Length: 547
Ligand SMILES: Nc1ncnc2c1ncn2[C@@H]1O[C@H](COP(=O)(O)OP(=O)(O)O)[C@@H](O)[C@H]1O
Ligand SMILES: [Mg+2]
Image (cartoon, rainbow, N blue to C red):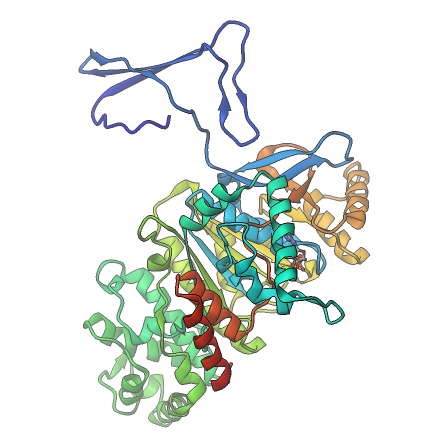
């Protein structure tokens, strides 16, 4: 029921009268369709004495739903109808696969938009550079804001005055969104309800991110949740050790143990554990026992000196300095709504090289994991973690990049806390299927190679021997022939046969990957800074170069 109410301590009985011969249905948008003449009554009593029996009006809404697009039976016999996925179906996690151009990023963005529309905060991990398109949530169909993006959208042999192209783009957007039932009021409401931030570790195109903040800035968690603070510290120490080419394993590496002990000593005492101070602690140690062993036999002075020297080289590196400024790695603060707006925080690593991406995302995901574990239990979708282009970060055994442990753990544990994980990849051969085996929602777009199709269908159909085999082969054939922006949808919680999903048109303008100066401009524009200032700022950045 959607009525504000205060009724602490009361006993409640609810009655629902439906006229004879009539039924309650569910409308396409997820609201209950209650027949005329129905009456809902709620009785309040205290100590067995009836106090009040209001008759309730207003709308009766079911759980929040994600209007992802249309669904159709898999054989296409039957009309397309709106799909309103109950948000909590994402709590058992989703996987989107399909070849390049199949519409994965579009589907991920639409899912993010829908989560935000339902008030669910989103953390999005961006490897290719297109998720910051969420900043381009223009609240009207006007062509003017699209003008800036015309240059990048045109192919080399397309010509025409920019204004004309922008008008054509705007008309296309208007026509497509209108066809999906999204008008300007819906666009404006969406834009007014969201707060999009883009974090770019090692770069100032977005907000820089301090990837070692668990070490170098003291978190209040040391006072009330030392266990989760320790998990973050451990990830930060692993990152430092990886950066200096040493064993990062928290369980096996003596250097990890020693640095963690030294850092925790400082953090527990109420100060930060800056790298420079740890370096000093290594050369003249404030402790003489580690575990049960004298420090000297745990890690001899010569080895401590060599580690200190390596840390010093790291500290002196200008690139590394850019990773140690900016926003604190604090998922809880990021995902807490401010000013009534639902946050979407995009961590973009598109500008980094492969090794740097794995390192930064490793520490980020470990932080997400320790945040998840500190959440209260929930069956509803409380937050969404979306990872587009997970290729290389969750590979099958025995590969083990720094990201893998946390993603595997999230897939197993996050559901209990109402945190849904949505992964997308173009390369289904590269996934650790043990980690994905219980993902409830699969969206499979067109896949070109037989090997890719077999891998996914195997995952979907489970056992592909016996009578399942025919079904699996049929599914494989469907996947082979899918048009772009169509997916086979299997939703384990819907207990229905797989169907087809056509994602709706995104409300955000899908400009594609943005350059550094475009990102700067888009952020300023989102923050509401005047057009002129945005241009000046991006000119300055372009002139100063850098990544
Ligand atoms: N839901 C959508 N709404 C609007 N445009 C879309 C949508 N999905 C895909 N597109 C368009 O189709 C193109 C390819 O889709 P994309 O999602 O980038 O594919 P993928 O991520 O699978 O490579 C994009 O450039 C985008 O313009
Ligand atoms: Mg993509």
